[in-house]
Length: 65
Image: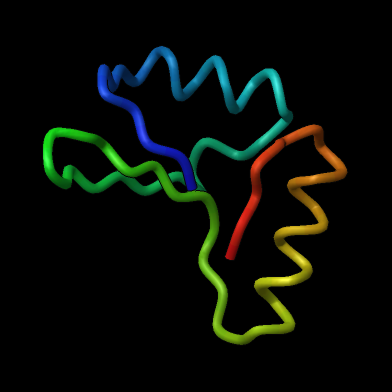
């Protein structure tokens, strides 16, 4: 997840392309003037850890679950 003060779909697409992420796994939510961008959905701590490791292996930094 990351937050953007100036959200644009183009920025998110560029980020996904840069890190080889699936665009259809992105969800957004506007909170306190920022747009929270989330990637993926998990149902357990194990799945969350696997997703975290996958994102790190794709060069995404600052990953947390």
